[in-house]
Every structure is written in C-alpha cells, then in structure tokens.
Amino acid sequence: MELLVTEKGDVLKENHVSFREREKQREKEEEIEKEQLKRERSSPFNRWAQFNLEHGKKLMRFAMKYPQAQAILFFLVDHMDEYNAVMCSYKVFQELFEISKPTVTRAIKVLKEHGLIAVLKSGSSNIYAINDKVFWKSWGNNLRYSKFPANVVLSLSEQDKEYQAHFKNLQTTKHKEVSAKDEQ
Image (tube, rainbow, N blue to C red; front, top):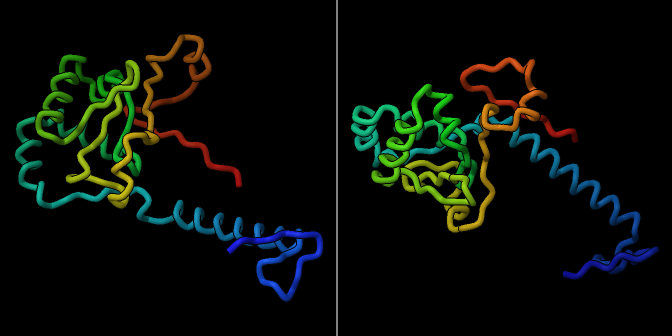
C-alpha cells in the first residue's frame, strides 16, 4: 500500500497522513527498533554458537591429534560473525597461542584438509569461513552469500609504530576484547 504524506492528511483515507503524523509514526518505529536492539544486545544468547552433534566424535579425535589446530578452530568460532566468517592474520594466532608461523601454517592446512574451514583471500588478507555444517551463529539463509561482512581481529604488533604509540599505555593480556558501546 502506498503512503501519501501531505501537509494536512486525510482522516478518511488511512494511507493519507500529515507530515506530523508521519513523524510520530517514524519516531514510534525507531523506538521499537531501539528496544529490539537493546533486547538483542542484552540477551544471554548473543554470544552463542551452535554445533552439529553429528561431528562430535570426529572433532574429539581431531582435538586429540591436532590440539593447536583445534585451539585455532575454537578461536575462529568464537570470533566469527553471523555469516561464519572472521578475518585475522597469522600474527594474531602466533601471539595468542605462542606458536611459530610454521605451526600456524600447518594448523590452518589441517583445518582446511578436514573441511572445517575455507580460507578466502582479500588481497593479502585471509578470511576464514567456518564450515556451517559444523558450527554456526545464525540461521542458514545468511550462508549463501559470497559477499559478506566479517569480524576483523588485529594484532597491535603488526601495525605501524606510529599507530602503536597511541596504545603504548594500554594494558593487554593474551586475549582481550575491546569494544565501544553505541551511543543511542
């Protein structure tokens, strides 16, 4: 149904509203959207990933044989977005798990060979797509897109010295999430 917004509106026609009425409608819609977003952010389920139990035995054997690859997989699952993707460098894995670059390379290769991740390229960056038949964070209809946003995990040590200087007093731990709250 088409909506017609005019200076006065027409009470006899439900799709003819005044500018003021439409403004009130929009304010109410925005308030509803803000409430929904607030509920989603405060939900105890906003940090959940789902796991297909059909892969349980395979993953238990995998964890025993490749513990470093399993740790990287769980890191990726923890940081993936609702499209099952995350972008980060090898340096992040090296620092987080205190392992060498060749160890990271082997772990990523093992994860790919076992079909647990796909590695997509964006220039020289890696985007890790976690197998949605094993782990996922949203409904499956988001997974068909080849163009998607991704969470990006950066290592401070990889950044320019100039940029690092801004954070010289920042206390860090092996793994720390820093997020800014939206001002709304």
